[in-house]
Length: 454
Image 1: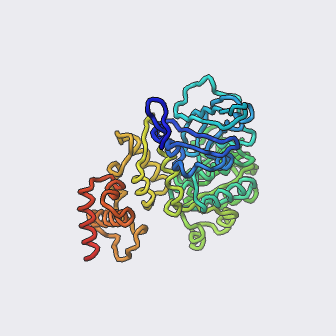
Image 2: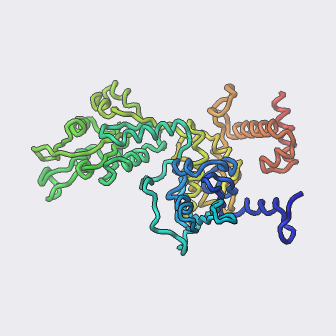
Image 3: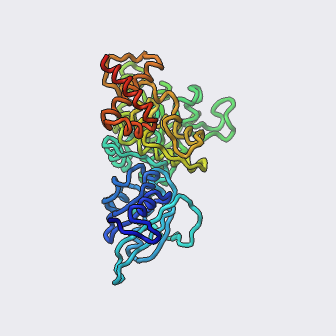
């Protein structure tokens, strides 16, 4: 029999209410173990409560779930405090931590209420910080997959040395963000990070933009001369993005910068020393380009001292859900809106091919946050391209990529309906899972089972 609170409210009803509060509620025992968290955690971290309960505070903190942390301060001083935090998915929060004591005055647990509002609070503890907290000013790199953990481990090692690095991968995978991250955790972090998009500079201006020029170097030059992008990064890091587009006549000059740490400004007869770390990025196969003579072989090997391959998002399925919630929070904060994502949308997007990678996912979430009027972003809000048939996620090799839109939609529906019926067994449960009526569910199952038998 359930115990009853005042006014007839029993424990089950009480915890149902707490579990569905908008504010996030956490409870730690007296030894940093999480013993309760409500459903609101999914909004901030993209995980169900059952995936968090039982974990240790230090494991989550060390993985960068939030920064900074107030819990050790509360345990030490046994006082109520609040602190502003940023989560790994980009949510800005106020965390109010309240110590709870037993009858003997010993700390028994710590309860936290976490809210999205960032108004000033008299409990805010502005002078508290963690000595071991690594502050990185670049955008968060959100990941969970094993393959990205290896990428980040290699990036941390490379950040400690001055050797050149080549970041490869498809467009939109986050190569520029990774280059910024390497700079921000390197000994050069207090000096400039200069990103140069090699495809955006006209070939006739490339030399003067990169290396600058001296007074009177050519007709139309500025009287005082010009500092080039390479020199402006002195002491810091240069990212040569889309390095495959660099003109052939500039490649030898760039090789000199990497090998000799010096260059000649246009119109100068004296070399100028420079201290930079060079990172290059490309979505092209530089090795093949060097074999055909389109790219200098010696420059390729100089750039490729260390290579980091950024995997496409379709190979990082574990990261997709975290990125969805990261961008949901990012754009909700930017446009002062509040949205949630339905479980069905999360599953659909986890199985999408993401040919545009993280950039495509970011643009989709921005579009949904801005255009959807309802609080919950659901299946009907997704653009039709998401539902087009994706060969990579299908086991039926007989299907043609040239399927019409109608055929593709039918095949996608066929797979969803049969998979759901196989899992849930009854039309009622399938209807609940797909958020459609039981009548429509029964019709779909009957049609698609008949089609499968044919």
